[in-house]
Image: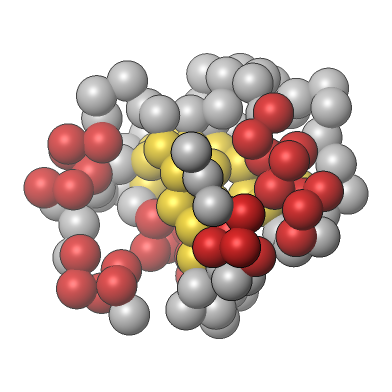
Length: 109
């Protein structure tokens, strides 16, 4: 169970692997009224996208590929400056590739 008070301390949501299932992302916006960046290379823009959401047809990986990139690059591309980021991912096992090829110390900053 997710603690709503903890969620409100985060400034932005980066959601990877949405597959047109954006219930959590919609709840995030309703609860916090803060930006959400949704990434999925396997689907089109969700029908129920809300005002603070931005969708990108790109996936997550540890290194730049044809249709994926690293979280740190996405963070930079969105001109994010917050250090309180909620990172959510359901990317069919690719989480391991991302973790193994990402500077986790840099992400933690």
